[in-house]
Amino acid sequence: MTDEQRRLFDGLTSKNIALMEEIMYERILFQNNLDDEFLGRLRQKWWRGFAALDSMYLMTIECVEGFKNKYYKEHEEGASLGFKHFALQSIHGRACQVFSEIICLLKNGYADGAFARWRTLFELSVFAIFIKENDDDVALAYIEQSNDDLWGFQTGVEWAKNAACFKNKNDGVTFPKIFKSTNFPDDQKEFWLKQYKFSCKVVHASPQGTIKRLANSGAEQNIIPAGRSEWGLHSPAEHAAHSFFQVTAAFFATFADAEVVFQTHVLRKWIDVVCKHIYETVRICFPDIPHAKEVASKYFGEEQGDNSEN
Image (cartoon, rainbow, N blue to C red; front, side):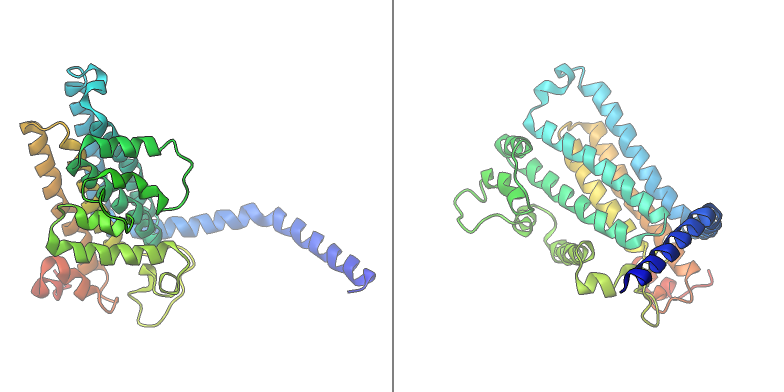
């Protein structure tokens, strides 16, 4: 490029930027209106499922506040509840935030983003169960590692070596090994590990997570989403409800009385309410999605899943 061409090029660029800056507010307002129309349709379809998720969050927060008011007065503001309680309290606090982030992403039509955040929620649930099932020295190791300058996921599970199940092993600790060592139902472990591996592909720049995304998995032909989507929200919504309950149940177990057992049971049953409304939306609102009936039948059964007119 000659000097004259460069000057011409720079001049045209400057004029183009000035013009775009002049009209950017008008264009963004127009785009915001389109976004509001989309979000209105999204809320109209999924609002019952969103309300069920919001209710699960609110019920959990209210329970925690009630337990804190009741038990912390008896235990010197929680200081005498032990390392396990403190570790699980910290994990649960973060889980509440991540669960809220997932709901926010779902409400804005970002299924893949919600699924990526579920990966973190699932890890938190596994760590919570693992800490609950082991001695206080495991919880203490978890707390102490927060002060270490370790980077990377593998180094992030070094604290788990303090558990009896890993102390005499030399092959290292991994997240799948931590998960398999928990008392999570054996008939469900394979399914959740498979879902976790898929979420890792969604998080990272893998071909599977790039081409086979949740947002376009219901399309007859390959579509490349570049923003919000009305489809694909069912999986992260259901997964988030399950994992959030697991973290909450592990934390609530540190209080352990009849009231806590009752509230834990209520939250466990609330997962069915979330799933009912999520899959009802899939069954009724997406007759044009090729495998929507198949997805809905996961919850309602084959006969009800095939009935999209009810």
